Length: 267
Ligand SMILES: [Zn+2]
Image (cartoon, rainbow, N blue to C red; front, top):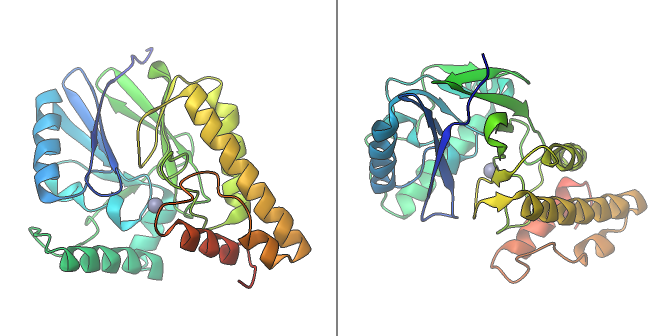
C-alpha cells in the first residue's frame, strides 16, 4: 500500500516561534510537539478535531517547551524516542529538569494549566525507522541526537517533508548537547535533504530544501570550527568564533559559551 502525502498544518506559538504540527489524512490526525500557551492549545485542539480523530501525539524531544500540550489530546497515545521513554520511566535527572523548567516558566509568567507539568502516564517508543500510520499517510521516525540525546525527527516521504525538532532552526544557533553527535546529525540531514522538499524546524519559519540546506551547512561549518578549537585546546579561539546567525539576539552569546563548554573547553 503506497502512502499518500498527509495534509500539513503548522501553528506557531508566541514562545520562541515553537512549531506544533498537525498531519492528517482520511479523518485521522497526528500532532507533533503540541504547545505552548493554553489558548494556543485550544486552537490546536480545534484544528486537529477539524482534521479528524487524533490518533497519536509525538514529541521530537523532551525539552519543556515541546512536551506540555499532550493533555489537550487525552485519547491519543504519546510517542517519543526510546531514550526519552527510558529517561521518563527511570526518572532521569534530565526528565525531571525538563518538567521543573516548565513549572518555573509557567510560574514566572502566570500561565494557568489544568495541572502541574507532567509526563504522560504512558510514552511509546519509536525506534529508528519506525512508522506511524495517519489515515492513508505514513510517517517514519529518525533518531537525531546532538541537540539532546533524545532527539527524533519525523519524515513524511510522500510529502517530501521532514520535521526536525530543534535542529535546523533559522532563528537560533545550534544549542549543543553532544558536539560530535550534532555534527553527525547535520551530515545526515544534509544527505537526507536531497530527497526532500520542505523542513519544519522546531522553531521558526518553514524551510524549503534550499533554505534548510543553507542552515545545515552554516551550522556544520560553525560546529566543525568549534571541534577544531577543541582539538587545539583553544578556548579563546572557540569563544571568538563567528555565530552562524542571530549573533545580535539576546542570550545567543551565552548559548555559544554553553556550546564551548559542551565541547569540553574551559571558557
Ligand atoms: Zn530543544
